[in-house]
Length: 384
Image (cartoon, rainbow, N blue to C red; front, side):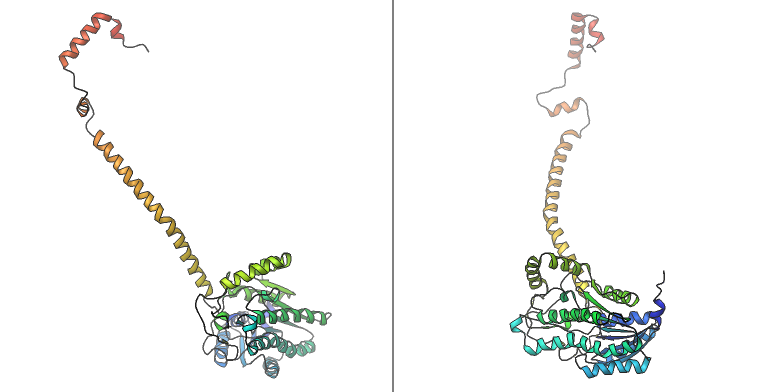
């Protein structure tokens, strides 16, 4: 059944930051597929221009506006370019984000500050740039991409978690300021999503980061954003693990903290060394413009390998037992066949040296003697 706001999506003007890869790119393509006009922003021009072509091939309209969201003036220009090209902005999605892992004291100050600048102040800059236009229009939807770490902290990712807490708090503050208007603010809090985000992340932990399982397909975030465009909500988790972790964090925070510390240390890093590096914090990746990061495929391969090892470990003793059992059965069968496969009848008695074939004449003499002693009763046979 077609949603009553589908017509709105066909004519919507949508600004998306962080649109060169991952969630941002996938979201831009889905809005274009619904007929929307897309204003794609990120630091790299080439992947944005390629995205514009893809959006137009899907039936939408699009423009590329290279933007560093940590630069307030650049973000104001992004809003102006959208208005100049399409005349209005219906939906603004603050999606751009970066990360770097490391112990709190070992993270360089400029790295910590850069993560806050891009994630939190990038969202602040985007919100401040678009809200005047929303107020002038009398309507609008602001969607801020936070994280499940916007509700609960995580070791080694303190600047990222701090920035995502701030984004969630900003949404709550803005909703209260905008009560009585037709301007909505939604906060999206995804679990681990299969994008190149972790390949882009910096590390100061001695090992590169990886997606911590369970890993969800990017389509789950895109579907959530499209649903919010049709029917805005305050806050939305994406991925059942995010909801479970939030429940555990709320009900038993002490237990959650111990569990999270152990799991993140064990599962959020590759098992190989890595030199300290800032990832894409200060310079964008040259060529990476994929939507997925290949993490779900890796997880499937890992599970299949573990299953193969598990069942292989079970198979070795099972096969050994089966072969031993078969050998024993074959030996028994051989004895059975060697002893009992000959023709039945008196000849079988030759196999037992204690038994001999009686002489026929002697058998006849015994019969006659039997009849003489027992008379006719002998011919009746034994009693029934």
